[in-house]
Image (cartoon, rainbow, N blue to C red):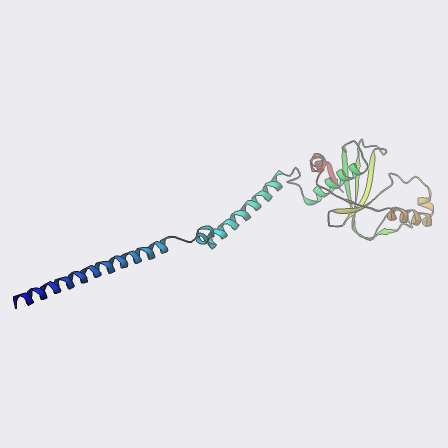
Amino acid sequence: MKKILSLSVAVLSIALLSACSNANQNKKKSVSSSSSKIARKSTPSNSENLSPSKEETGKSEETSKTEETSKTEEQKTASPLSGYSDEQVEYARVTETIIAYYQYSYQPVTISVTKHAANHQVFPYKGSVVVPQDTVTLTFSSDNTMAGTTNITYSSNHDGTINFYRDPNHYQDERYLTDPTWVKEESQKLLDSVKTIQIPITFDSQAAQIISKIQVK
């Protein structure tokens, strides 16, 4: 009887030890699994590390726009013609472009501007044809003599180009006063001689030196 009891106690002890061992192994597996999940959650993927957030992208775009605006404002401020009206800048640029076109080697001492409404006469005499657009007559001189003076009449195409013709410096022919038919023919010839040229900004340094001399009549 004692032997049977001893054997029973031994079997129970082995069973209890085996149960405790299995419980410890299950706990270790549970802890290991939890640690693995935590590690996965805390470690971002490569795409998450490399891809900027929407907020960061928005900030980057705003910064880029701000820098572009700042550069544009700096360029305007740096222009040698800043502080003058658009019309003054136009007249100065046209003057310098015409000087370059005729290959003059001087800078004008006087510049005057006369504005004309549409349908004004090419010549100020009876029989003259008219110009259908609004135009500007630009007169500039190297020395305030008739020989050193240039007169051009132009209209803007509003695309960085102008159409222009060169006016006579004087009207000495008596037919201006006596022959309207001849005046019509000559004025039409002048109108037909119109040239189109680009007005660049490459002459702005020179234009800045003469812009204060411009007088609008």
